[in-house]
Amino acid sequence: MSVSELSSVVFPHLHHVRIDRVSSAGRSVRIEASTHLVHALCPNCGLASKRVHNRYRRRIGDTATGSRETLIHLRVRLFFCLNAACEKQIFAEQVPGVTVGHGRHSPGLGAVLTALALALGVRALTCPHSCPARCPCCG
Image 1 (cartoon, rainbow, N blue to C red):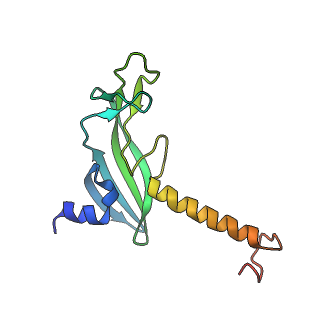
Image 2: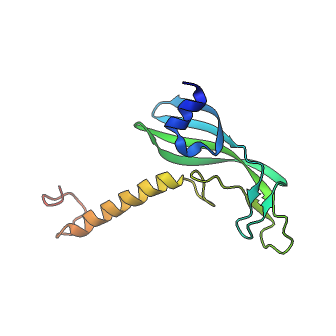
Image 3: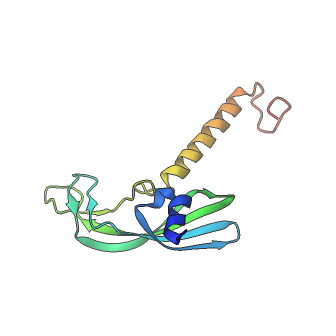
């Protein structure tokens, strides 16, 4: 199995990016990746642009790989919107399944965190004592 085939099995949500390097340190996995799409769509008007303004790195938390936290260091581009009537003059490209505007974690990790918060909230609501510490009924 090639590295690209292995990457598509382990990280299927990263098929829109080029994985440049995967490294492991302690309890974390670091993925260095970059985008490879030719153009990006303006989030405001939807017009496609190929005109790059700048590049920068984003650090995105992702769902765990095994029992290790996963951090994606993603190199993304800023584009000029070519629509003169659009309010957004410059916008950052978004990678489906990996980034959301102004987000620091992937949609997958966001779903896990939301489910965890809801489960903990329900548990707190079901305790008849409203106690901050663990009581026999809360276990």
